[in-house]
Image (cartoon, rainbow, N blue to C red):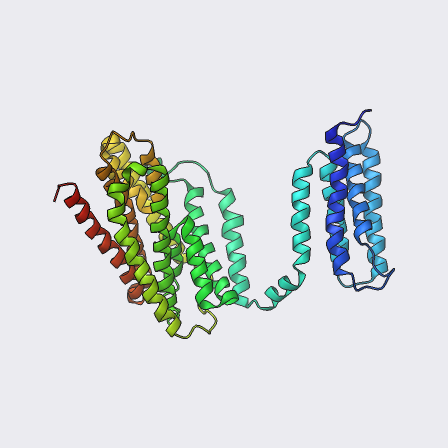
Amino acid sequence: MMLEADDYARLLVPLAIGLLIGLERGWQQRQAAPGSRVAGLRTFGLFGLIGGLAGFASGVAGGWAVAAVLLLAGAALVVIGYRRDRSPSATTEAAALVTLGLGWLAGQGLPVPALALAAMTAFLLSQRARLHQFVAGMGEADLAALVRFAVIAGGLWPVLPDRAMGPLDAWNPRELWLVVVLVCAIGFAGYALSRRMGPGRGLLVTAAVGAIYSSTAVTAALAQRLRSEVAARPRLAAGIALASLVMFVRVMALVAVLVPFALPGFVPVVAPGMLASLAMVWWLGRRASAASASAAPTGNPFALLPALGFVLLVALVQLAVKYMQLRFGDGGVALTLALAGALDVDAAIVALRGAPADAISPMLAGAILALPVLLNTLLKLGVVLVTAGRAGGQSAGALAAAALAMLAGYGLVASLAGLG
């Protein structure tokens, strides 16, 4: 039987997998006395090769018996090594079994997934000290929050129906639950980063990175902490203002790239809101630094009820958008874009991209595109007021300032277009 190039990959990749994991295991055991280690670089390389040979043999007619013998022999070597090691930790032996399995997977003709999993395994093994430190620093509330998040993200979301249903077929259960997952993830990440990097930097990093995807979800996640974390209110308000600023910058860049003909009407409306958000980030950031920033974050690291309230709002907006589409069709383009864009500004920008540049004037196109940005800002203002009440005064003020600046921008556009 002649071996093809793919066959060599199926045999060499298992060896590479074993050497990669063995390199990490050998480094971890580098201080051990010679002869005291059960398995190191060479042994793990052979474990990977044994698994690869078993996987390769199982694809040959009558080769399953050979594959079974090889895998059983490899597993027996792991058991013998564990009994000889007499160590309370079975990490090396477990890694050896994983190496056998990944070698078999590569030998079966799936070298790329096997190599990717091997890299992840080596990374996990290399994080021993950090993971132990992470576990030691967790409280009971942190563990409970992490488990709850695993349930809603890994237990519920994948099994929900992925199809249109409900009134007017306006709702997709899996997409709606993804909003819950996103809000809870941002809230938990902000809590964790605040403990890791300090209350100020961790929260702002969460707000900035999360707002690249959804400033609305960031606002909902941070707003639920405003009631319980009194000392952190200036930081939380700065985070909400920063998320709004990132949204303004993001949509400005998207319009410049995707719908450049609309910039003459878009910039005069959105730029004032962006500048107002920048000023509020600076002012609230100064207040946050003047307050005590050394205390660890308090409050519930996982709050499901605010996320459920936000997803209810999303569902109502989606129903309204569906009704507008069915009731007015193409005649309600501006209103439909505005309502949909209140939740997803990027979607409105992409939708208008398909319109011919000469079908609508640049000033009007920019004004239409800016409307979802304004409604999104007002939506976030409503989320803060409903979720936090009076505790969200500073955050609401930052969003209101941006909305008022955009309204002033609309006046400027009206005068430039000769409509005022």
